[in-house]
Image (cartoon, rainbow, N blue to C red; front, side):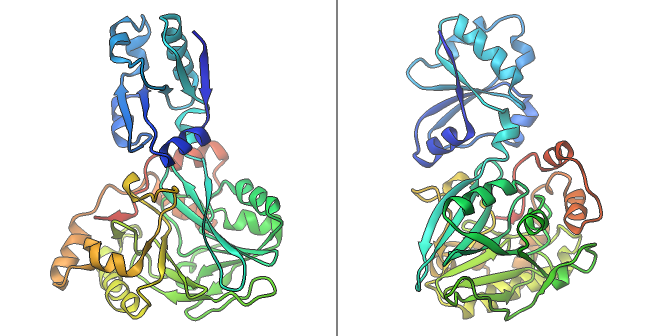
Length: 375
């Protein structure tokens, strides 16, 4: 039988389309339990590859013959070996090209809406990491929000639709992934904006982002209104785009809310978080479509693979927006915190410009799920 290759883009389409897939993950059990490829109709078997060195006979009966089978490992090599052994045993299987390393870096662009005076907004879904970034396009110019370090994807996409990136924003100083903002600015000459309260220790030049900043893109004024919304960080800033979209950064997600502890300030910032969610956001139109910077679980994806929901719906359904007792809210977001992101302190220092790790180190720092939320 032939061993086939499946790319991260092909797996992403299966996630979006809710297709069936059987995944044989040959990483160590701890790595699998911590982070895996998720799909609504995916089934899994986790057998560390070193248990299969002497053959795959003992697992043959556990591998279905009526579904596509994908073998996954960290970097590809072990999955190729196991896939070849399964093929020699008569099974038709594929392996994930580049392994989880490449899966972690894949970005899938999805159009989420049009702008009133012409133009579009695109969401880039980092499916393996749960990160979401955005490109607002109008009349040949684009603004980019919360870009990842995989900058060529944005540059190539902008070129493919005939636009150039003129502004790059980070909604806050990220602690779970390395920002591509500075790199894109160097490559394009775009203006790089950061919330000034998050940028007190940065070592590079940036444009300070303050509450009430408005921006024009292209020949048409597209209302990108900066809204100071602290809580995840002290400088966290949301954006209202075209009076239709709310880019909420890491303050508000579809099924959860932002955590306030990644700079060691949980007790100090929990009040800011509540103020943002229960006062500032309550003053906004409930018809705004919330576009967060992350998602936690695969259930948050819409049918087209995008992640979004009306603000009014979140006021009704998101548990984090419906805790009336302030002490109960404080307890939830300070005592119910998930593990902190992998290497989050090093990631913060990288985003400040204090350290400059090489590409392999950056990949290592980012491996694992996003952990920016409280549920």
